[in-house]
Length: 299
Image 1 (cartoon, rainbow, N blue to C red):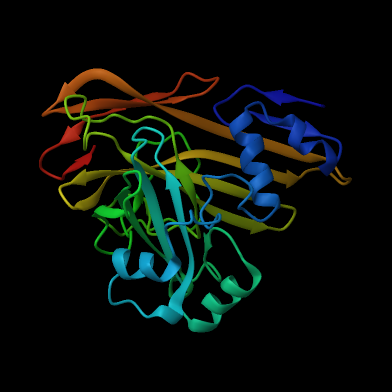
Image 2 (tube, one colour):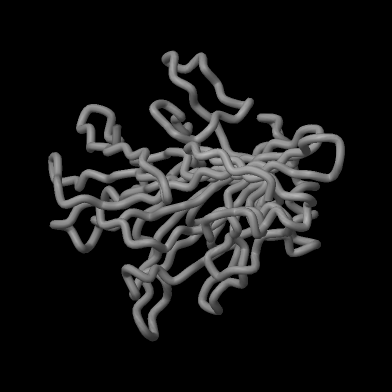
């Protein structure tokens, strides 16, 4: 390693591409690097892993995205919710074209990845929560009612901004959609501490990749959804992590950068919702988000 620059996106230089992974300081960054380098689906929480025997793809499509064409179903997933052992998290991923969905099904592709970074090629994600009692059929408890479309705000963030940000929306930098819906985040986020039935957030991780001459960057975002009766509604969407590698100098040397945040539920509350804090791992940056009854989101 030739130099280390102490900053929120500390840059480390390594002699070759083979040294890049070991240069990342956090386990989260190394996992992001591994995920960017190979197809998703290696972990149980990744979208598209095998369905439990009591669920099937067509039934999930009809219950989570009623009225959507069957030929557009690319993949589906169901995962036991660790915070609620009697409940399961579910998703269906719909392609923009039948041939894209067919390719997913034919090659057992995981995740929910766009054909390209063009808006017309984006995949759509639909979410649901099922209750499953022993010996009984699954019962749909809540669903998103529409494809997830909430933009991710980069305002007041320590994460570098991707080139794809839209700055025309209320003069705030936002990413309208990810290019990959990745996985369920099974960390415990109890946002309404007095409500152990519907107070847990359903958490989803998504990503955005950018490639350029001599390197590339990967951005990861966190979405939180709350059960509001039979509806799953988004309450939080923010960037969480960033990794970047690029060529430097005349040889094979690479520069490696990363920023990784972690989310903590705080004891302070507003209108029944706990405050949440984003804090940079191995850094000093932090930001507290509070519930807004006006927007129905964390601001």
